[in-house]
Length: 238
Image 1 (cartoon, rainbow, N blue to C red):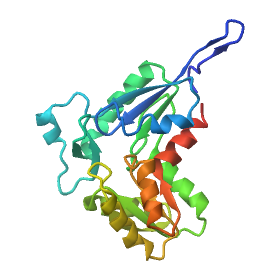
Image 2 (image 1 turned 45 degrees about the vertical axis):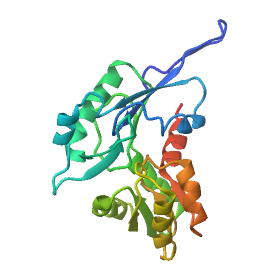
Image 3 (image 1 turned 135 degrees about the vertical axis):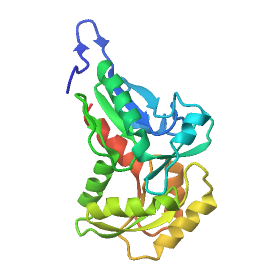
Image 4 (image 1 turned 30 degrees about the vertical axis):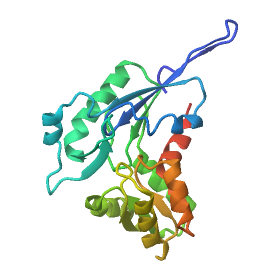
């Protein structure tokens, strides 16, 4: 890992390790931090940047997904939900990664569970889709069927393909974490609870611990919160 932060014992000076967070929306994400910061040492410094940070309403409209593009969903700083095409934001993500490399961060976390090909970076990058899929494989070696809750119905086909590549048949239900109600989560979980699934995965970084607790109230299946799985494992590298 390049440029690790150092500990100077005699002077009792501790250099913070820097983690670059790329959100598929606008930063900072108050719904994400400080909730996931609890997994990290207090000496870790987080630098948040969003792919939509510098964009106005006209530019945002240009990122809307066409019928043949993969839909991603996030939110603006004022809480407004926003959708975009994955294909259209890849150059923006790479530009942020380039910035983080120039700033010598110790680790980069892409805060999105969508499937992405590898980006160019000298700094290690955590890809949540890969981590989530393979950790779930480790928990359920028999694979089979899993229940997956996604933000939008438009995302279901892409999500099914992603989990198919990990060896699972995904049965999906939709509940947006950005236009969230407890009733919507209850309906989504109940629809999956009667299916023959190993577990229910909340497959979006936007789902919170509070939402997971609501899901658990309405399910006899294990409920996996993707943000916990991603950030808790990432913390092991620092």
